[in-house]
Length: 173
Image 1 (spheres, helix red, strand yellow):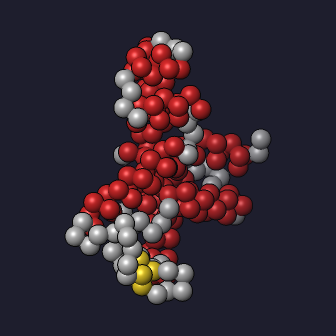
Image 2 (cartoon, rainbow, N blue to C red):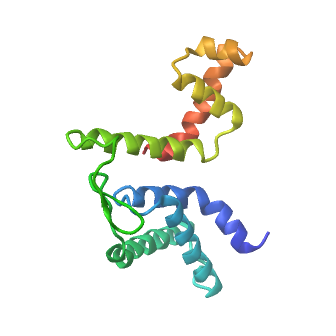
């Protein structure tokens, strides 16, 4: 592996956490896009020789400041869209949306937030077994019922859930 590949491999978990935390306050920036932006910053800095003899902490701090600067420079070019006033592809406001009741917009916002959070967790590194266990748990099955359905002990189900919980922590911080 090249020096850059080793650097990225070593710093990726921390950069992912940084990009997730930075994106939390801004719904119009995805944490995966920010992660890619941080990698571009690293690549440019690596090519220009700015990362030679620098500590990981210094490099990560540079990534953090680069992402903050990215927000500052690009936030004025973004357009926030409210779920209370949906807009179609032509830019026209859609008034009659059957599932959106104007008396309860907070409930819908919470629903979409939870749905997007669940999708992010489901699509980021869980094994097939962990996904199976999570889906069965979400369906309301107990640990013993999940174990009997999958043909494993309830202790194995507890271990799989613990592994999945550890992987999901970065999304729940």
